[in-house]
Amino acid sequence: MPNLAWIQGLPKAELHLHIEGSLEPELMFELAKRNKLTLPYENVEAVRNAYQFDNLQSFLDIYYAGASVLITEQDFFDLAWAYFQKAKTDGVIHCELFFDPQTHTARGIAFATFINGLVAAQNKAQDELGISSSLIMCFLRHLSQEEAFATLAIAKPYVGYINAVGLDSAELGHPPEKFKEVFSACRELGLRCVAHAGEEGPAQYIWNALQYLEAERIDHGVRAIDDPALMRLLARHQVPLTVCPLSNIKLRVFDSMAQHNIKTMLEAGLCVTINADDPSYFGGYVADNYLACAEALQMNKQQLAQLARNSFEASFVGRVQREEMLKRLERYLAL
Ligand code: HPA
Ligand code: ZN
Image (cartoon, rainbow, N blue to C red):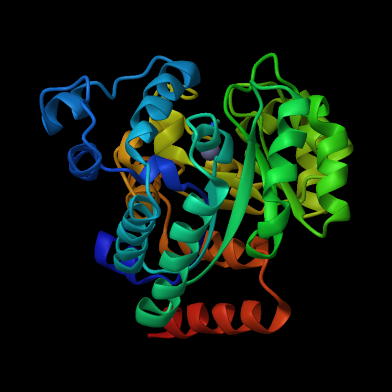
């Protein structure tokens, strides 16, 4: 059985990580103090105790409230730098980070404030930790397409810092096709496209993300299991799924890890990957997610290595970097 040390040594990419979801309660308190804000919690334990969720929406309410302590460029830098240090411990050598501009612009925070903080942390992570990274700008799907277009307009001067766009927040009732035109505009700017689909929403939303948004990866995608034709398509075209096992348990997508379908999807030949989603809220970073799957689903080293291999295959890096990362993985496996 693979142990935590072996998993942390396994070179991997993380492709589904909301940077706002890596805000640990300790940093939340520190930033609240620095920014002279009062939190509706007594202490760090009270925050952690509040992290009991019934579904996606019950999490989102707390997650957006938590992000309200992020005000200055330094705050965003500190947030991302804390994540990169944890990623280093977990063997992450490349990551593609989601950020939610609308969560911040709605509070009067300028686009430059968060993008500059995040980019400064990315540069430091490359220089000091050897971790490469890119940014994926997410549109909040509970808001309108018009608001997504307004966000894209203010993002335009910074588009050189952004690699892709995504779609997150409340899935049910907000199908992918609601954002068809804005995704098309993003592609014209040279941005790659991904979308959350099939987390709480049905398999049909995965079809729609592929058809209407031309999503190159599906975030979560676990409901694909309900649709054999979709499973065949995902396998044939090796459409990556960025699965987040601990998130799925916390948000009750599955009752227990033993019931998670990631191993079934891996065995069906899908390009599935393991990621943390919102590690501070869901009780674990990426290596914890690998370990939880290994233990509950009896996954062996070869299967975990395949998940890591998939993370590089699914990433948006160029061919040379991909091959370098894959070689690094094979060297580790040969040890
Ligand atoms: N699903 C949808 N929106 C999100 C998530 C998620 O898991 N995490 C942060 N925003
Ligand atoms: Zn997510």
